[in-house]
Length: 387
Image (cartoon, rainbow, N blue to C red; front, side, top):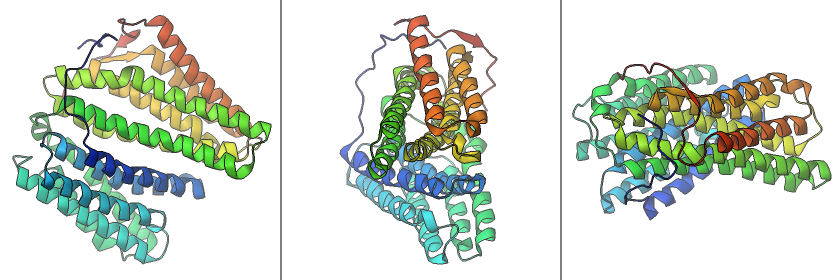
């Protein structure tokens, strides 16, 4: 499949409903809560905790989005959306204390997650969304029961059980490629929904940086870092929405098995994108709070490391769709990784400045080497067989 020309226009399609947009408001809060978990005490441990909490929130949102994708809006659909939204809202409220605080928060998180899984399983059964009874939704129900049953366990045991259950839950779609391959897809609606989630995650970087600047005080260093932080967010927005978003819709429309794109690019690939954006948001917030400070370890590398993960995910997504790797995406990814590895040696304001410079330069280069209607320079790499 070739890259779509910049002039490609989409055919009329169903758009996100007002009920879906209300549902997305809950996700804004959920992403904020996950960022707070990571930002409270940044370390490898809290990074793992944040992923354990983000995964069920993300996978629940994916389940709801796929479920309503081809269903005409009606009151039953709205009830599924609102019921799922309430469950995710309760999960988000309990998330910061669900793993390492009194068991009440863990019970609320796990109970809301199990209820979400029940809602999705019942809804997909009623709509005959999958031909077999063993599918990602039924696996999600089983893992939801396991997470709920383990909520009263001590902290360390709880973390291990939840991690194992979520690994099974995240891996379930890989086991049912035929069912995924044959699903009917509402192309533009689905691309729009996942693009909206990217907007939500990008918005967290603006919120975190702005909130920190307001509480810290607007001296020249803070204002400069705030401007650079905004440029980081803008660079990430441009590199996704200028080309990648259109490419996703093109792939869903033209590939013989669009369900596999939903699985690999949207479900898995966008989880990596969102994870990277959450890390960027937390890193930018820390940097604006103390621009002259030289952080260490994970805290120092969050902004460039998250941006690097975002770029790598875009590279892999493109390879999955087109079978090639764009050099204009690989080089910035390598540069961001290098910044992340040396970030402990540099003041926060310099780290943010370098991250912004790489992203802005990448976008400028893409504009210069790939004018409207021309594909990005890319290296063909044999695409793995769809399974």
